[in-house]
Amino acid sequence: MEIEQIAKRGREAARILAAASGTARAKALNAMADCLISCKDELYEANRQDLEAGRAAGLSEAFQKRLAVTDKIFDYMVKRLREAAALPDPVGRVLEGRTMPSGLQVSRVAVPIGVVAIIYEARPNVTTDAAAVALKSGNAVILKGGSESIRSNRVLVAAMRKAIVAAGLPEDTVQFIDSTDHAVVNELLKQDRYIDVVIPRGGKGLIKAVSENTRIPVLKHYDGICHQYVAADADIDMAVAVVVNSKTERVEVCNALETLLVDEKIAVAFLPKVRDAFAAKGVEIRGCEKTRKILPEVVAATEDDWDTEYLAPIISIRVVDGLDEAVAHIAAHGSGHTDGIITNNLQESQAFVARVDSASVLVNASTRLSGGGDYGMGAVVGISTDKLHARGPVGPNELCSYKWVAIGNGHLR
Image 1 (cartoon, rainbow, N blue to C red):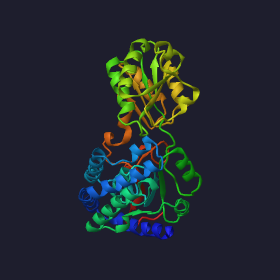
Image 2: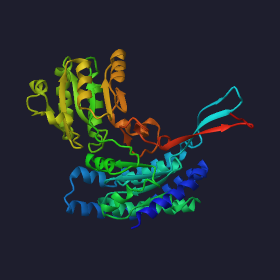
Image 3: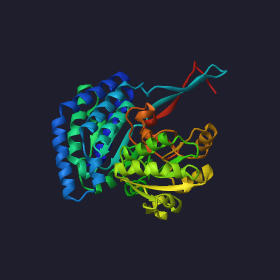
Image 4: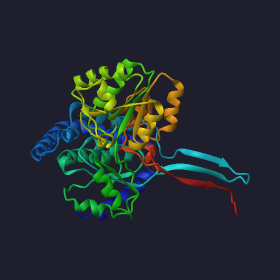
């Protein structure tokens, strides 16, 4: 497989996309959703084969959950394509503008980044999300999914490329590296002449390997060690509901709750209720010494637990002495992804928001809301814990750069 030629075709497609209208790109996205529906049975069969091969290869249950295309996931994929189509066009936005005293008109205008390479594991919905975000923002995308989902991805990419051509845009707007050879990733990472940004989605090992082996800028997040802090004045019933949703709505995703911090003033009243709620969901609790004095039956937490992204039905709980200790714990053990507070005290919530340095900080809301869709961003291609260029959910706006445009009338310096 000639990776350089794939990257070069991506650059050629990106040049055409940069000049395409927002209407044309939205038309292509809706056509992609229609084609996805038409190939549903084919996709389900391909996914069944992927899952069967994954089980035979000994993939973990959590990994298989990420790989599976259920009816819920399929509907989500179609919905995200249509949502992306309906979003305001991010390309051509005037981010700022002014007329100088000389009469020179200066503006900063949003433009596509160019060619985006996305390297990811397991989830077939990343294939459609990535294509949606890239196309909406006028970028060409090169997809390298994991070998475990290759059959599902073949079906998805073929359907989307067919729709893109039918809408009058370049077929190579979306390209797929149809190979299970790990060497192709290293070759892809050498294409800094044609590829503008790489987005790895997967485990820490994948992200570290990509970051260390390319000169192309990388948008990344290493871990999703997400926290909720239940303050002394929290409404207990609301806190239980928010915490349980944060952890169990989907345990295998990066914005699922991993560590629960509980103010010692509310711990005796709160912990038995949250224990019962977690027990009903099959969640194992690992607690600090103070937690185990209230819940002696739970497993003792080790220091490693505070730094673990379980991606499984396990949660660590620590009882803390107020906001300062909660914030200090998050600073020491958090990953800068998503952290929240449950409180009825405005000053307490404002202090938490100001002091916790994470891409998303939530007040009285589930950590599962930080994926981007619930922020009104439509499809997203991942969540960045970087601080340059994008932070938090990466949607169409975040896959835009900008150019300065100056209009004069014979102006000279």
